[in-house]
Length: 114
Length: 109
Image (cartoon, rainbow over all chains, first blue to last red; front, side, top):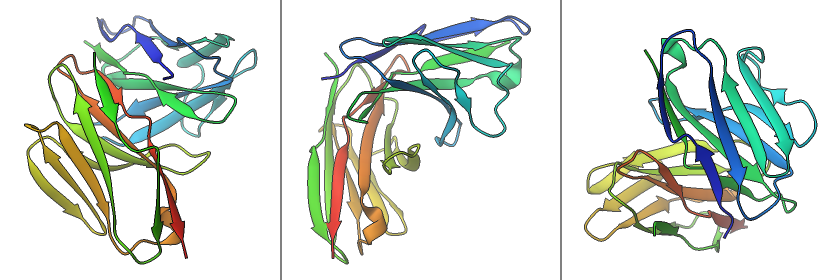
């Protein structure tokens, strides 16, 4: 089956630093990648959608300068949380969509900002 | 290895009841999630089970048996808008989410 990986799985950083999270589709080409944030009450909030080689489309209320998304290839997308603050602490999940519009989710990255 | 199994597709009739099963084998267990996803939209959270038993929320209920590695989502009084994919996901001991491939539910009038 389709496998999506995320790295790192867990990161703890100091306030003000930047953190990069990688999302890879391991055995298929992802035409589209999605980044979500999972809140304590378990809901998933879509942050942005990115297509390979083009700029990401951010959802309303998501700061594009704070959450930088790069979709450099058909198998890799990165989310960089710039100047992270404690309120950015969360669980970030990516998903990758294939040519059949099927979506496969990654295991998530737990970010803790001190 | 870790895996989540759920049926690929199910069909049910409007007004009826349907049960979507999910079995899992993971390294540890820190809760099981059910999400609903309509085509082209982000998943919507439905339920979270961490203890054994049945959680009822309106027309939707979710059951968990940790000893059996088993959960189900029960949908009652089906409506056409319930046609969607239903995703089962388990959080393991490393706090990683293991996702099922989703069950596509088709509701017929």
